[in-house]
Image (cartoon, rainbow, N blue to C red; front, side, top):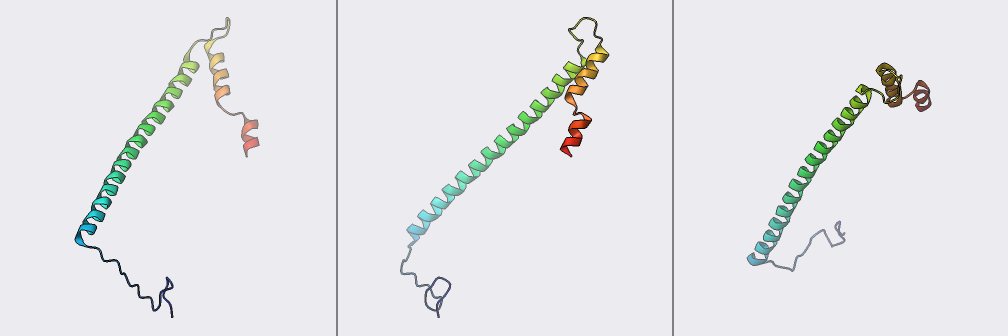
Length: 103
């Protein structure tokens, strides 16, 4: 009968004997890898934080820009601010037809 890896009776015979120096070398390499992974995780967290700040800044800039468009007087003669705001609000909000098409 063979074991899961095809070896008889599931017994693995390891002819390679590692001495303390080789184990120390392997442990050192694993420590280095762990250190690199920790550094990578910290950089990833920092980038993620900066991305969230950028997205929030972008969102705030869009809100400010929209408020500026809605709150500023029009450049056309004879058009009052209420008419301009209504036109701007319509351009930013979807129409009933658009909403029905999406559904």
